[in-house]
Length: 351
Image (tube, rainbow, N blue to C red):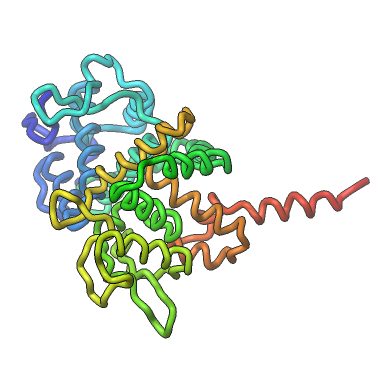
């Protein structure tokens, strides 16, 4: 299947093109407009890759399935597209194994609930940007808020690890042979869980981001949206750090501005890629033999970290700060102590 952004039909006269305001981007057609939006994220490799994938999928679908320009898609078209994401048909045409050659297909198969939610959010962001840029007149998804919200209950339960899941995961790690590969994987799990980091943050930071301030150790992170923050390093993680660095034949504690990667590759002087780290986590999860954990990704450990911080009594405001959430509601998805308190309080009510 030909790559979406190399298609060259006339894409400049969509029904939703803005005619009343001067356009703020240099775009003569839909392809150029989408590229202008993508250019805003070139400094964020992971975000750019995800946004590019979703915009290409949508553009291909509009041209081939709906036989419309992207800028002509209306509310019903997007309703059809979101149903299409649940089950891309005809499957032989749209779906295939991951490949970069001529057999490339836009989809591997139907998107999970979380992947659908991500796709919709990205497309909504694209449309909103183009409306603000006066390239499009209106964002059709703004009429579909129920569609955006319907995934929330699924996401809340999908990525929550039960105690038995977590114990099985750690047992699988314990069962691995003692070598440097196991040590690296153990440290990866430790920082994902004990710091609540995103996998992209692990790949892009170094041991020099562990710093001591007034006698306390902190991890200084630049995260989503290029926001800088610091996360407390507890004594357990500090010991894990020392053990792993000894195995790497480094000093027990990092020096200021040290550039050695957190999760080093054995084949280069750099870090393991996010994909390589994800594969290590996924393979360990599969070894547990628990079907639910076949879907486990590194981000589950970030969510589990928030839940466990809540269970051991860490304050809600501190959990929110540790995970760098912008609003309380995001944190509350993984923190359940308030729900428990509400339920216990409700027992006081009688006839």
